[in-house]
Length: 231
Image (cartoon, rainbow, N blue to C red):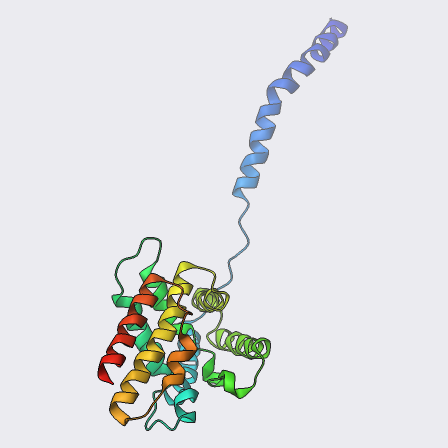
């Protein structure tokens, strides 16, 4: 009897093992699912993020006091600041007609940040004799500093991406905002000519044939026509 019982028990082992295997797998899964995830890093405190934002904004104040170098060089009285230039570009980005494939909000943001590094490096112009690669290096270094000052995070990342997209001329929005950069300059030149009785032909010559978009070309043509009628 004992011998037959032992044989029966042995014969049942494979069956029990097969039936228990799913239970073991489920128990292991439950253990894994119940294991707590590693704790997430604490978010920055409101006081530290506020401090970083104010530090960043205080540095941006220099954009309001840095005069556009081209106008200074030409002896324009009370020349506009870098911030003045960026602001009207932002307005341009807000009012252009709807264009398929162009994100208006992205254009506005790009206009607001495209010259932001000038808060540190100043307005470097071609007449300064700084090679293009060196100018780009200085501005890239300045932007990195400003993004760190802001505390990193999603907003700093967005500013960095917008700035690089503009520098690389790598999107329809970047092409349009680059056109607005030139359009704003020649519109300002026309206004200085009318207000101060000076000839700023060189600024119109420097942009001729360099507009990339239909909107940029149309607005530049309108400004040129008004200038011609005023002479």
